[in-house]
Image 1 (spheres, rainbow, N blue to C red):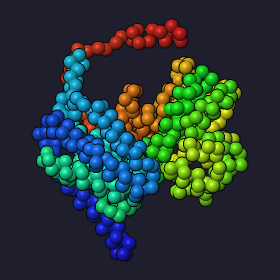
Image 2 (cartoon, one colour):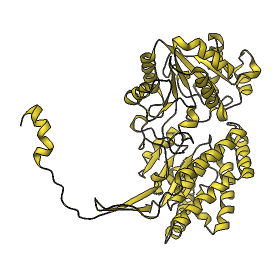
Image 3 (cartoon, rainbow, N blue to C red):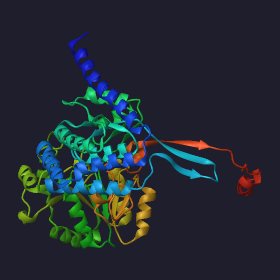
Image 4 (cartoon, rainbow, N blue to C red):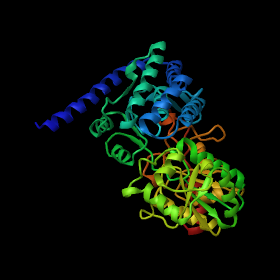
Length: 474
């Protein structure tokens, strides 16, 4: 056996040992459990990340280790995402009988999946793991995390806080574990192949590997949030919301606006409104210079991804008016596709703006953008005409149409919309995903159905075919 083979076997054995411990702990956790046990476990994890001092420590560590985002916004994200999830799962039954349909003779019983694996990104190295852990424990599972290399330290700290809470209520540490450092594709692959369910947020390479692993998998698609501003929009509000969303956590969110499509008739007023909120439209020369820096060597420049605006502008070596109040930049959109990477996700304080003649042209342009990148994820609309939202929902390849909202705050659930709080948005078949909704607790449990006989309800042929026969003949 080669040295490389022995090393691979050793890494796989480490993961196998984790899973064995997780299975044993999960069986003890779920055996004879009532709802209070699962709810307490979920709350303990929530407090591990939401307690203010811990939240600040995790947020500071996340920015220090990953170099992505900013501390203040990560504190907000950790708090609000977790609080919103607790709102969503409060009073939800995940143990025993959860539904009795007397008319149809069906009883539904919630059952744990077993051991869940979760591959989590460096962009949200605390919030995403916590969200997955809470959902897993709420439904009676154990969970093993595979953090990105840059997120390992944050994940270790989060687990230490979780274990401190577990100790208060008598839960086993083995219910929540992480793949041992250093991270490797071998360990992550072994995790994917041997757990009962694998959840993947982040790298599309990892998503594809998860779906090919042979394990039931939930992966989410790439973001490239595309937002239309039409001639009926409340422009000051649209500008305020877009600016707040685009700049939040330095645009680390997959739901951060990346492309805006503006109807020409309101362009000047909209740009004025954006300017007042820190948006700076670049001329062609500055735009070319920015693109040369941001897409250096065919890849996003890591020195510009999710950086503060001051750093971003310095690395790009560009000048903008009123630099001290600038918060993000806009580049003119001229083309779409791999040869125009600015039409895709940029993970930075950059927006690409296309200008079109009317709303129908905006729909066409959005469709072209999504065909290149971001299909299935989400589109936004700032408009006073609700029929246009329906038009987008019926024609574009998207699972979410976000209407008159700050996109990154709305897509993953908000206190003022009805979507479940999540950091993982399924993109349906358009994005190559197995789910088309926000990842939430229901994806973390099985349901057994008891089916009893009921009075027969067999229709006559006439009841089914009359309308068809009237058209086509019998």
